[in-house]
Image (cartoon, rainbow over all chains, first blue to last red):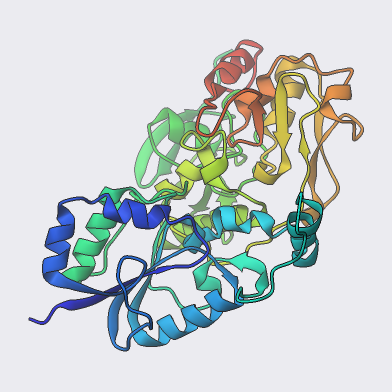
Length: 176
Length: 237
């Protein structure tokens, strides 16, 4: 049996979900035996490949870049998993949503600084009006809430997906 | 005078009850689980959260178990695919209505809304989030009111009115604009009727009302104490 192509993606989040993924410790070896990690912050690939089996998405969709990425990811992945509260609910990333983007940038980059005020616009993507959960933009096949989801939960989800089954979180999943 | 005994069926099981008990009272007395958020033992029931909806034979619409009196010969079903679906919808609408960010909440891990999502197997909300801009009242010396986390269950309103007898809290405006309000729209710290007893805080199912000085996950509540006081005052059992 050929290895499953697994990708991870880091959108508007804190990397905590990726840390929790790494917290499955020695089980990583077992996962590596069954899956190739083909894209994500843990590997070097520059472009999201075609024909990915499972993509774990951390973070909310918050910028033009996130939006473009997630649309490509959806097209090229068989299963998209929203991993963690930012991807599932928009969570802390959404705390800016009650403030208009222009006002927010003004406050942070102009009024809130001691020196060199100026809103960065070179090489950084424009923010969307709201940071939103992944499923508000593209179809999501599985939601794994938690901030971050515990390593054991991630492991059980990944293990089930690698076996080709859809994990049933039942009452294990918890926000926060 | 002894109360009249009645019989009702819940999920097919024949149970005896006292006249005047609600469907929820009878279910709880017989260890049958019906999910609730706005109900608190001892306080009056208002049927606000819509999680305790049940099916009653012969009646087309769903009825809230907490406000529907048990009647002799009634047959109640507490769990069906339809009820589960509706309860999930009700809970998801509560989640998207305001800014419930569990990760940074004092009540994270001790929150009835969060626990109920887990119990009902809600892993995400299927509706777009509302992201309202809501105030946080930190004017009281000991307590905080965060409207972002309020689900308008009115347990605080009833605890303050029915147990403490102060009626500091009430709900103002209508529909999606509804907001918990202190006295006649005063800041909590300026309230002249608040006795600072903290019953509203203990009765609150989420992190909307909390004590100052606690960090994330640190605020635990004792709503059983509010219930005990309410029952002693002759409240609903």
